[in-house]
Length: 425
Image 1 (cartoon, rainbow, N blue to C red):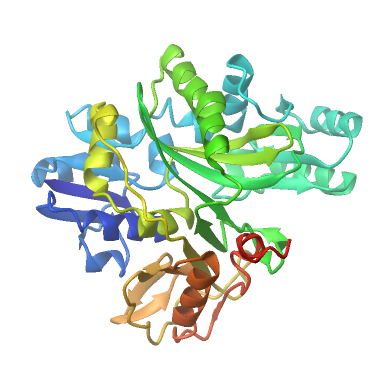
Image 2 (image 1 turned 180 degrees about the vertical axis):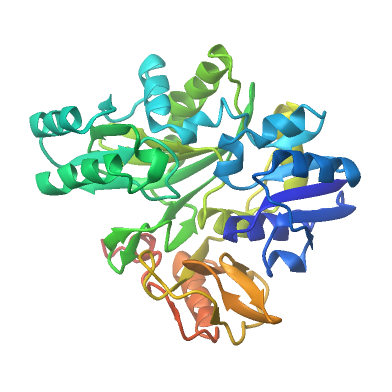
């Protein structure tokens, strides 16, 4: 098969690494890719916002299958444009991608189909949002409705914080994403990520993960796109997985089909495990980053047939096999992230990874032939082990051999799972 992968982040490097292992692959391209992805695929300098250019490339190279990694092209309708040419595409239509593209849309689906989630209201003006917040009290959650690149969500513990978050949205801090605001109840519990493939009619549960959103150790400081993750998430017991499928995933799949927007792709459900059980925080319509890195490290099955079955509506004919060994990834970010940070700082060398280890590139590029850090989150250093503690030790041992002066990381990724393993909770 001739495959094109869309995207250039750590998630796409993990997908490329796994897809390239498939015996079904004959030619593999990535647009625009990154230096890590270049180990596995031919990089194509396409502007993925130019749907006609992507379609023309697919026609020119007789591409059989397109895998769309990031959310923005999906929300913009790239999958629809390529399907119009008869291509098999992994990723939802623009209408179905509203599950991530509009937090209000998702909340309305939850309300209509009785899916457990926090109570909410949608607002298109500041004063009304603020008076609702004052009436509800804190803690409370304020979200920009649209895509804000992993930002735009404030878990406000004080009234001033909540009111400032409303101002940020309506004053343009998140661009068009903040034109509408969703204010919702604060859910108390432990967060987990649940991944499930869906072809519109069938759902195939994949695996669970837990990521660390806060920039500082002990889960302190501002929210980021994710500073590390591990899989599986111990809080997601077999019973919780079953309940998540029955109470959240299946009603969503049914609701999307009934609404005329059948969902084909990956459901990434951000969950809060509360005293009542699993409740939906939000949906994403692509693999997580950095969760994808730990999922791909644990996946024993060939990824390509799984994604193809999702695109072709035959998910009931495939199954996914997973390693029991946990995997853990640590994000190395540019100093200053998630605020302003220096670009194009030199990465002098990366270590050779052993079995069950991989340094995934997230925000890297080449400048005059030398590797540089181009983004906020730059590398995703990943390892597996017999326990989370062992996976953590291996990941940090690998990370400590990276020669990049401008990089920083958290040193406590996996702390919650390790406390469970050692019984020190």
